[in-house]
Image (cartoon, rainbow, N blue to C red; front, side, top):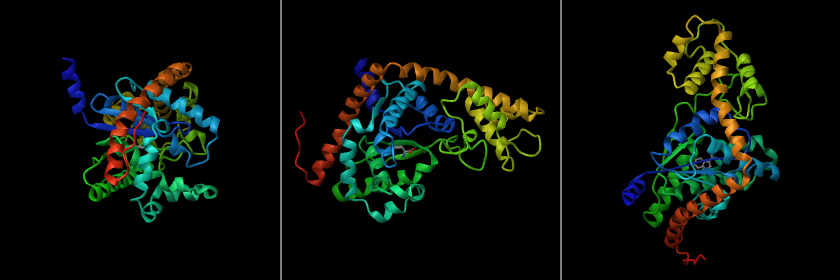
Length: 342
Ligand code: TRP
């Protein structure tokens, strides 16, 4: 029985995803990523990473980065990632990521990296700190993914170009050195792309928005959430329907449907003939009902650092075992001498 179960696990496809521990996560991140992870984890051999090395490509306050890393680990678990079922680990705890990144650097070209949309965006935002890491960001991301022979990568629409590069590098390496990496596919969740700013619904909801009312953080309390929804921008008439010329109302309906599990049509029916103010209050309450228990659970987990440390150390060991299988193969293929690890 046990060996049968084990065999089933071996047959599952590998899913890899990572989030940077760089501070606030919004309900957009939750609805687009974390909430899906919980459902995906039983169907795939799931590996979730905290991409701390990636965060260093923009300036970080060391003590804040440490705090954010614990916060994100606790949040993953509070959102339903079971660290015994899935592998949950900190990227920097598995040196194979940096090691494979180096090898992939030798088949990556400055031209293709400097053309990346995110590199161009971040370079213009951080003109005082355009460092090599910023340009190399997608190569490290490719290393993250390829180390685990990943088949599926759930990503936000903004990471599509990076996933494309991961595929290109895998194919390039395989062509040059022989079959080594699986070619990963992206999985873009429906809601991920659709949670928009509450203040300017034509823009994506972003944690770095200078208008704090434009986004809901997973750390907002109930009163704050309701207040922000009350202020959310709506549209000129008073119909509560989803339509391209009503971006504000459409966004609220999408959020409501994502947190309640109702379809948008069911939500439209529920609010037929209602006032905008009642509708916004109800959306705020529904979002708070989703966020509050997660926030409470996250803070409970966060207060037990020993537990978190042991989860992350166990996760790093399990991740290492998988990662070094691939890295050893890569080193052998490129002609590096086999190294002994003790
Ligand atoms: N760059 C991703 C983001 O900001 C985070 C990330 C790092 C990632 N490594 C990854 C996502 C590997 C998927 C797979 O969203």
